[in-house]
Length: 482
Image (tube, rainbow, N blue to C red; front, side, top):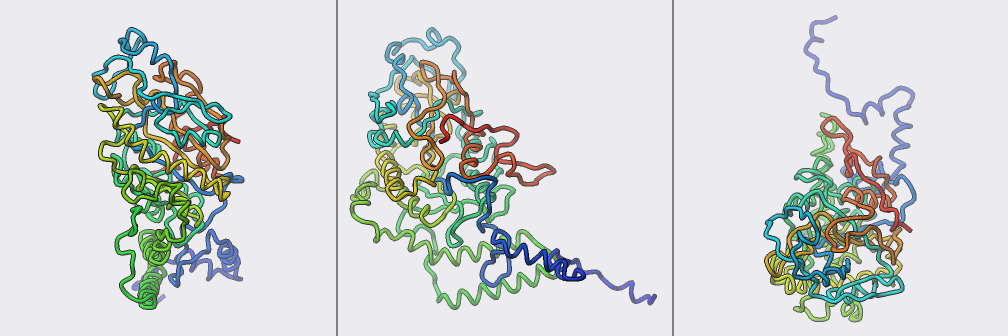
């Protein structure tokens, strides 16, 4: 053997090269089969790179195709919204320790007396669901809603509770539930993000990590859009589509050559995918945000008929969410609008704070449910309303309520949900769960189930183990499933 052979450097072979060069065309047969499946073979432009957001099959028949998550940042009070407790009236003004026995330490631990709700409750619909005067519009939709009145959280502080609600983990760095759903199912629209966040003006504590992809590929992270006329910066092209396409094709060809010479590179593939997505979004997003085709009746239904009224911001978010669902976006989260005060975090001034927040979202949420139902989209759209925790049945100071992770209410409507039902129960003061305790992992498991995913099988290998959104927990909230 010539000594010159010692100078030969072996170039790593990619999987695609190995399959192509295998004898008798065996690799080509396997590759052809993979490329025939659009969940593997969908490509972006001329880059030759697989599309991570291509639609993928679920584990079982799905009841819902998309999720609209109405996030009530700050922790709305369950005993002032949907969990009617007459005993608060009976014991109003009394020492909670004398009536309730043990009272758990709260965030600020300056508990006052038991405080009745400042709002009246009435029963609505054939189901007879109790709703306070804070939500007169949502009250008209209760027969399409399933309430979970026994939700709990492991955290009583906003940042950790936000991470827990969004990622199933109390610290930053884990993938958001929207990212997991995109990873598991892809998206039905390759011109819009699979996971979109419609920012009403208040990013919740914990910041953008609530919408991150964590250790999942960057393609699955949430894209934050404004509900205004210009949802994204630089969304309008500064050059012709022909010039943009030529530049992207050149970048894609160079990157593909690099991948073929040195082997696969996830970061490089994600970067090219993101360039392509941004290119297509410049054409899709302006059309999405153009409300000109919506009738005046629809705009009025949502509360968009007056530009500067208090419902306008969330109304536009809800209408954009409906338009996104129509276009196949997988997961859409709506954050709270600025209403001149705090989020749903009323440690004081409960009455004015909750009234301002409820006024901003009540009519738009009701309109969203009715509009989805009218168009038939509610049948395969899951709408979820939730905060990160609830609030205490006793006062903080004289006119506020502190954080309460021991029992609170959230609700679902739409695909696969049995409307007009309720699961779980808190005690007679709305303080702690006494029947069918559920936690955030159960919420995530149920959402995934309705989308056709078995939460125990949706895993990603990271740090030496197969990790899932629900960790080692999670059970379905059976009473609300149709």
